[in-house]
Image 1 (tube, rainbow, N blue to C red):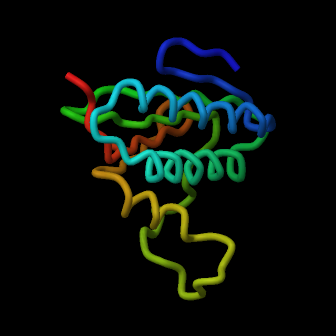
Image 2: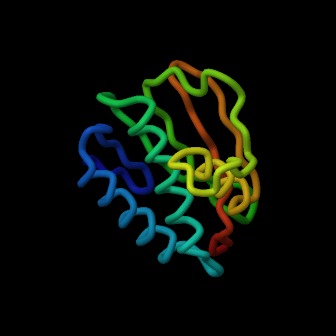
Length: 133
């Protein structure tokens, strides 16, 4: 894994790197935020990275934080095609389903969530944190 201040890159087939990325994100937020919901930030990171690993296996993923007003936006870009159809941000009909809950949780835990195709696929989630001034 390569680290450059507040950006991380790893291969999707390396789960250990994804776990280390989560720890690096938590450490960065702990050091740069006044009010930081680390549980929510970790959950959002985990759900979004799980989607990348599931839907864009075998490629690279870049993760970075960028300022968004008083908050940080978590940005994740991969080499995949992205969603084949517009995602549902509702809970699945079967609460025990193995899929469908992740984006619902991401939408509920973030201040804003957006996605786009741009030479790969990118998601951007504004985290419930307040940056230090």
